Length: 384
Image 1 (cartoon, rainbow, N blue to C red):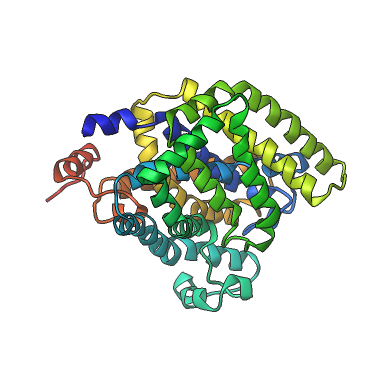
Image 2: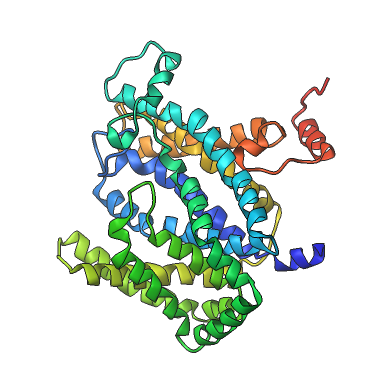
């Protein structure tokens, strides 16, 4: 069984997951310096950086939802629906609740102070964190942790379909679908439901709550890894995918920069084909070149979830002190990015990774006593 699980491990998905989450950290470190309203905003912004961040925004989270869907295929395994829900609650809800009450609240504190509100201390502010939801002009918000509860909701909403696809009848349906998707250019049929969900479901989503097309991305990721030959087709089409992505994304950015109006149908068609193909290209090239593991991947693959939970609070605190300084915008961005990476890594490595009491709060499994002792010995922690 263990050898089978090792054989099933798709290291390229781990590499993409690490890449996508660390890009997210870099992305948030740049948000004070682009022309979008964020928690902390620099007076000077960069036009070029704004366009680049818009480009990142259009595929970074969709890629994570596709990878999450792929992970659900392996996480579901032969579990019952009840067993899967329990596992998702442990993996998602515990870090979410802890994250909102402990990690997110300081972000709101520093944001309100930046906006001119005055508090005697963080302790003085904390009760005000519960003064209404942020959508209603209050303070309570999950901020960047919206991804966790959205993913949990999608897991529950899609569970009947996912369980069906794992059943004998579902596997027959997947075989038939795989035969279609592995025809020449057939893989791009998967972009049709993405387009339809963007066109007809996105207007009904709630920003930072649920973007319903993300649910479609989760299901797409689930289906893509269900059959090896589907991923082989994605790999074989990787060059075609990057060409399609380059053409349609370039056109999309050209229309944005030149204020060219397009119909809703055309906007979502270009988005689905361009950025969907980019995700296929990333999956294809990763499968071709990144299907291996090493010490760096093993370390970072475990670290990304705590990094994700922690990083934005550190970014907001750093930006609060760095943004008002009289210095070049790129130096501010560099300091915010580097500081976020260094402080997040230090907190994870020294205060989360070695301690079983904290690991579940950041979505990590409990370690055996021997492993904990090894970590603590490495850090020279006196266990007496």
